[in-house]
Image: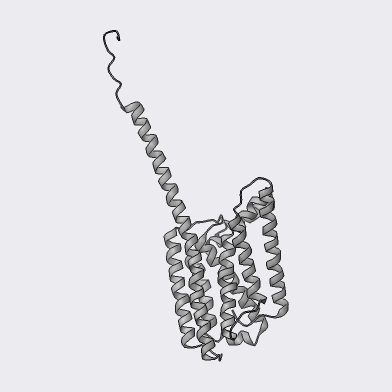
Length: 281
C-alpha cells in the first residue's frame, strides 16, 4: 500500500464496499426468510471485513506516516480480504441466484482453468508476497508517491492479491479444484515467513527513495510484523476447522461402514443353533 490514492478513487472504493456489504446482508436475509440456513457468523465476518476496508481507505489511523501506512496495509490488504473470504460470498450468491444464464456463467467462471490457476495456493502466495516485496524493496513506493494513478493501481492490486491469497488458503467457496490442507498449510507458513522477513527488512532499512523517522519506521514495521501474524492466525484457524470437520466426517464414514459390515457378518456369518430333536418342554 502506498500513500492514499486520489480522493475520487477512495470515494468510489468506499461506495463500492458499502454497496457490496448491503447486497450481502440483503441476500442473507432473503435466504433466511425463505427458510434456508445461513450462519450469522458469516454475516459478521463479511460485514466486519467490509468495515475494515472502509476504515483502511478513509478512516483516521494513528502514528506517523509509515505507521499509518502499515495499519492501512494491514486493514485493506490482509484483514479485510481474509474476513470477506470467511463470509463465503460466492456460496451465498449461488444460493440466492435462480437457475439461469447468470448463475451458469458464475459457475463457469468459478470452475474455469484460469480461476483454478489463480487460486492455486503457491501461485496466489507468489502474487501476493511478490507484490509486497516489489513495493517495499524497490523504488516502486517512491514512484507511486509522485503518480496518483500508479498509487491507485497498487492499492487495487494489493486488495485483489489479498483476496485471492485468502481464498486460495481457505477454499470455502465452490471452485474448480480443492487443494489439500497440507499444501495450503505449507503455503500459509511460507507466506507468513516471507511477510515477517519483509517486515524485519523494512525495520532495518526503509523503502528505497523514502525517508521516515527511525521511531516511525520501527513502529510501522512492528505493526506489519505482529498484525500480519494475527491475520495469518485467522486463516490458520479457518484451515484447522476445515481439517477437523473433514477428519470427523471420515471417521464417521469408517464407523458407519464398519457397523454395516459387522451387522452383515452377524446376520449371515453366525451359524444358527441346532434345532432340538425332541419337543420343547
